Image 1 (tube, one colour):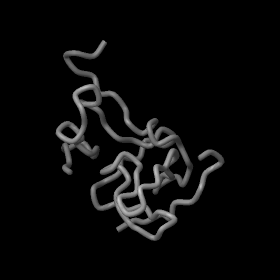
Image 2 (cartoon, one colour; image 1 turned 90 degrees about the vertical axis):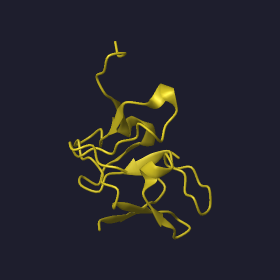
Image 3 (cartoon, helix red, strand yellow; image 1 turned 180 degrees about the horizontal axis):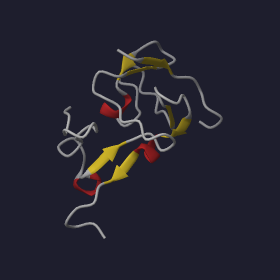
Image 4 (cartoon, one colour; image 1 turned 30 degrees about the vertical axis):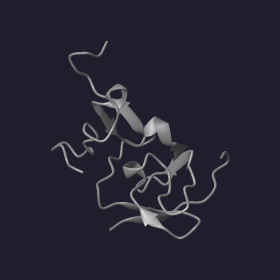
Length: 102
């Protein structure tokens, strides 16, 4: 299991067979058909990946869209477990091409 401790940045499950996390059933309709990837290196987190909040809680940040379920802190940036670069959490959600995209 890969882990990373979250710290303040400069600003404040299913598998789909391609390595991305299927968020189709967990998101509102406007956010469906999206994949999660690091915007810097393309890493696709898996359900067993864990991030740590300042409060000490460990969870998969993409299960809660960056909000710690223990203390409710909303993380605006997320560190990649592969390249260790910080990016805006929302930038990880990549639209997938589909019949209604365009």
